[in-house]
Image (tube, rainbow, N blue to C red; front, side, top):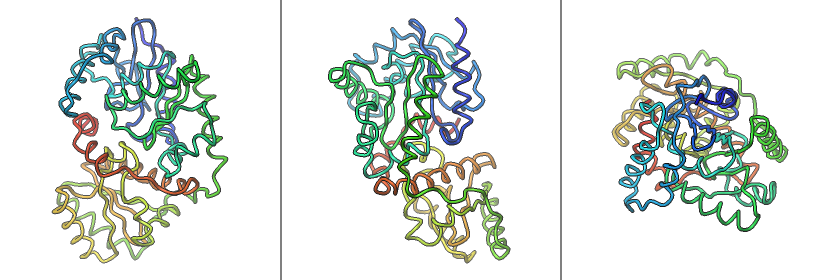
Length: 368
């Protein structure tokens, strides 16, 4: 059976819109009969084609719900991964998304999971649940932050069961705290209409609106500093990218401002930027010393370096990965800034960060 062409087009639509998806984030699926097609792990939605999806048997997927797995979280994830692979019927060389069972919960044919900046400004705020109720009432099902994968699936399954008992119908919209948005529908038009309305409703509450996001060239007196950082990183087989704009300028005014992005908001932040970021001054020797100290402390070089009153430097194994980290961190700053419309920032906890940092599934996605 050929894959639904509408799934490919809607995946590309949201994957190429940075307001919804950054880097390789998000996942999409389509169901027909006993089959479900879902994005393969590590695949980018922006240019996805038929080869980027995995087809699974829903009958076999349903067994994940009732199977008793190990209580050890990492052993359990290996067991779940094994059962997901056993359910694959096409593209068996590809690995299904870690959220496959979550998508299978919904009866709607299309399930689109994205990480919109506007929605995450609400979901990564201290008043996320209360403001969700104020804005959407019972239309939206809210799921407090839960470790991705099987744990999130089971948590959502429980909340959905309670939602069905209370309201008599399945939710079309789910808010995942510090994670993202799920929208379900019969077709792409339903998804787009719902998504646009959600974005519009949240945006209407913004009293603080984003400053200019266009990138600015470095000041002439900072070029020597940037060259020395670039040389230092190049000698360690890393490529650096510089970025600055009005929004960035607000966060690099000093350490007090930079701390508003000092921790990840979402799992994707950790995948693409790691969980620790460096803030330093403008003296080259001090910056280099701070990078060395950072490496000694965390055992990896910083992927994000904030330079006081100068801008950001992102580092990666190649220009593409460095640019991707810059893009994700710019999104983090937007979320941080806009979250102040809903009481301020709510970061992931140390325990939540640790799980993502060492979780095999996310390290696989990072490597791909």
